Length: 405
Ligand code: AMP
Ligand code: MG
Image (cartoon, rainbow, N blue to C red; front, side):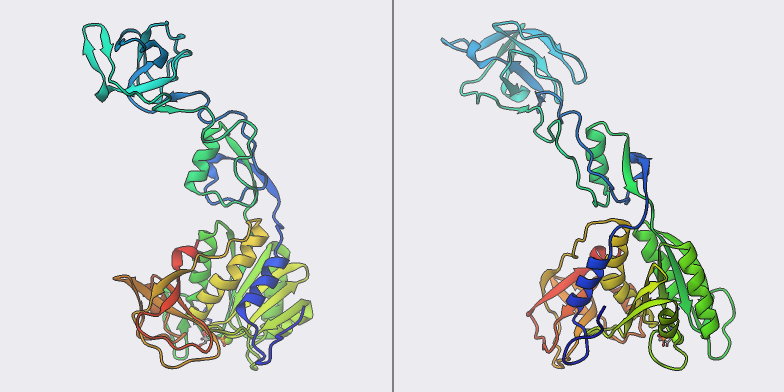
């Protein structure tokens, strides 16, 4: 693995992402679970439909099923020879008659059309049909949704509610999915204190632990929380080794710079393989990527906003790849800017913004130390390197819904 490879020494995010995705193949085992348990899980195999959906032609309306050939030579009235509610098994249609039929009921053999009940009048026992019936109308055809033998969803799909419905529609009660990825998280920093405890001078509360736990749970992964790690080489080595023994992947926060109190870099080099990336984004300081023994490792910067954003942009696609999910870049919408930015910087900037009245409105304080900006925002505005922004300019907008689940 190479380190930074551009003139500026900063790696473009696209290059970092390519490397991460390329190196992130499924590592979790496979298990079979019921579809009731499968929300958010990643399909390991593509199921094959053993039935068609719908399994037979059925009525799209409450109305009358008929063979339009019976309405020749001025005939407009047909006797009603059977009643077919949804769930019943129809008889073949008697020639010269029609059938009362309801939405979802199977079309009887011999009928070619359903006329909606609003267009039919009754004259005693006879149904009176209008002129100009369109042949084949109001019939939902067998297999119009899925055909027997079709592969239903691709391996690598993260199952959403509609997907579960599709699996159910072909009668599948169980699916083969990747086991939940077990991700160990480490919060480095001597200054960190857990919420609920008193704060002494020099201390701050540990936000990242809860940001990471929330992010990983939203991705359907299991969190192994190794808590706070002291800023010493011994504590960092011990925690990383433990993490590598019990988890499929490791994510740490803080301590990835090259200061005297930053031990992550040296420890990864001692235990495995390290690639330090200075990525051309703001916020986001160096991100460490590598392995502890054979376990994939990502070290995120400590500022909570940087932790959140580098997780969303880099750790998320890496971990989803390890989980077996097919790579899907986030949808970037093009939205008019509601702000001016005269200062152009060399890094790609991710502003915390709201989408209001069709425009992007940034939080007033974009410092990476202001986590409230992320909590307030609807998503991230992407300002490319060396770019000024005027009101009304088209700006890339990634809603958090694209990044947090
Ligand atoms: P570091 O990357 O360790 O130099 O940390 C950068 C900044 O983020 C420092 O101001 C840290 O105090 C802060 N920080 C690091 N970890 C956390 C955490 N878990 N929660 C809140 N702030 C943190
Ligand atoms: Mg630190």
